[in-house]
Length: 224
Ligand code: C5P
Image 1 (cartoon, helix red, strand yellow):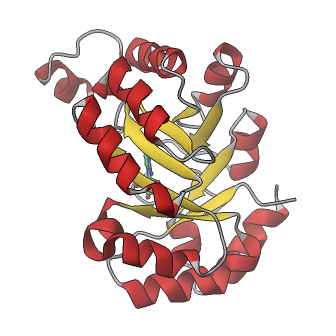
Image 2 (cartoon, protein in one colour; image 1 turned 180 degrees about the vertical axis):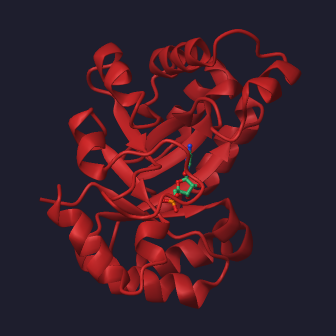
Image 3 (tube, protein in one colour; image 1 turned 60 degrees about the vertical axis):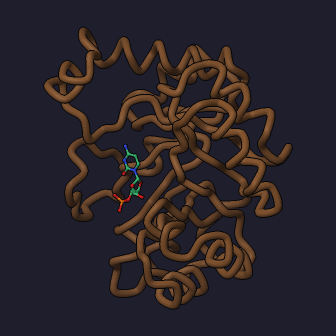
């Protein structure tokens, strides 16, 4: 079985990114590259990582007017990423146009609320009330707009799965049992997140900062 674990390679250093991906490739299912890497190395860098032979998750969290987002996604067409993120807050038309512009094999997944925002941040940008309600509203909007799924925590994914049976749910913030939690506030194990309904898991530092990243990836895979 292909591993559901995408390793988050969060570095602007291309050689280090390639070395890491090469070391762990036998025990992960894909590679997640974010804005930091893309700003530093662009499509050339993504192609270099794709040579490792694993699916690519491009975590660009696009958010702009529908035409601009669709044009940006068309410009990424030849990369055919397995997964691409956009912001649900960009609205229904933006999400519809993003999905229409994406490569047919790309899962277009929405970010609902950034977990870096607390209740005070949200009220200061005019999002009042219950954060949980906002996540639910944006998840439903993503579904109506024809997206493939959303990014959510392991604690939200069971409810998301009940509401959206065939949704594609990306769960970050997982930690192997007994490992360091770092700056993630609420974590669960990869196994629990899958049991709750995750489609894929994003795992960064527990693999990338391990003394032996391949052994860490292998140990996580063994629990799944
Ligand atoms: O190192 P760690 O496993 O915490 O990395 C998690 C990855 O998932 C990072 O790339 C981070 O940006 C991303 N992410 C997250 N929490 C969210 C959304 C994305 O940790 N709520």
